[in-house]
Every structure is written in C-alpha cells, then in structure tokens.
Figure (cartoon, rainbow, N blue to C red):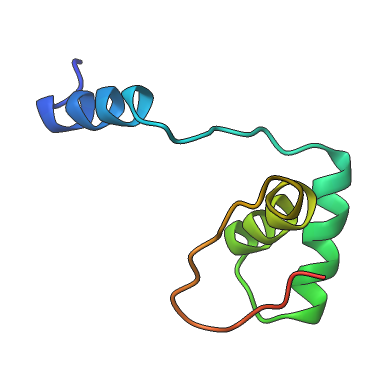
Length: 73
C-alpha cells in the first residue's frame, strides 16, 4: 500500500527544511524522567525539555512552548 500524497509531501518538506532531528541518548532520558516528575509534561515535552537543557543553552537555540513557562537551568 502506498503512502498518501500529503504524507509524502510532508516528509519531503521536513527533510528539506532546516529542522534538526536528534535521537535521544541516555543522558537526555535521565533529564526527561526528572522533568516528568518535576513538571506536568507529557513524555514528548519531557524530551524536548531534555534536548533544551543539553543543547539549546549551548547553541543559543529556542524552544517554543505553547502552555507553561519552564525555566531552563
């Protein structure tokens, strides 16, 4: 069964964009687990938080949060 045209178009647009794809590592998993206990976040948001803690601060990257303010310290 082939993928719908919109799915293929979305994949192409994502892969052609400047988005970064980062596989989580053990260190990020530990940060995400602590964030899950500290903040009321879903698991996906916990990994975004972990990525921000590890990489965003070093590289002056920004994470867009739509709901709660979460300090990156």
